[in-house]
Length: 147
Image 1 (tube, one colour):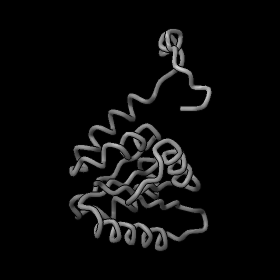
Image 2 (image 1 turned 90 degrees about the horizontal axis):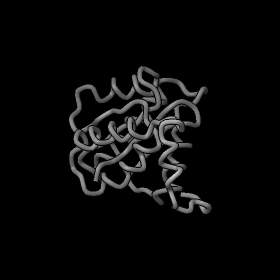
Image 3 (image 1 turned 120 degrees about the horizontal axis):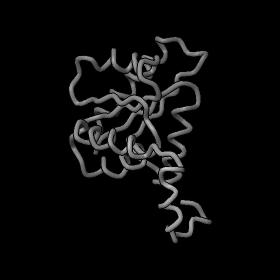
Image 4 (image 1 turned 45 degrees about the vertical axis):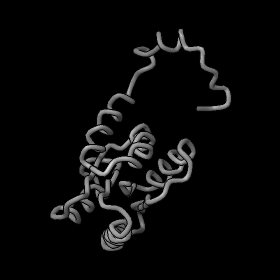
């Protein structure tokens, strides 16, 4: 199994984590680290380091999911893992990526392979209603109870 760290500005990380688990159920070996306005960079960095250290005892590889390329959570994570193997960092994380990743990570051992697949999933999950309206016209599934 590949471990996940989800991070981002404010309530992004806890929010997207909660949405993921609403769809996939409770997930193991996932750490959530929000970067809050009152946090110092040192405190935030220490939380990421501690999460990596904890996960490394349980999994062989880790993916860090961040909200924004070049944002503080991404930059701090990159600084920490620059010379470490077995850790990938992804920016622009969306819910499609986390849902699919939470399922696929159970049977995969290569974080690089999983990231490559999830980057495509993330791109494919971005649409405009106008471009997919034909799909919905012919869709007979009942989603009245949610997805």
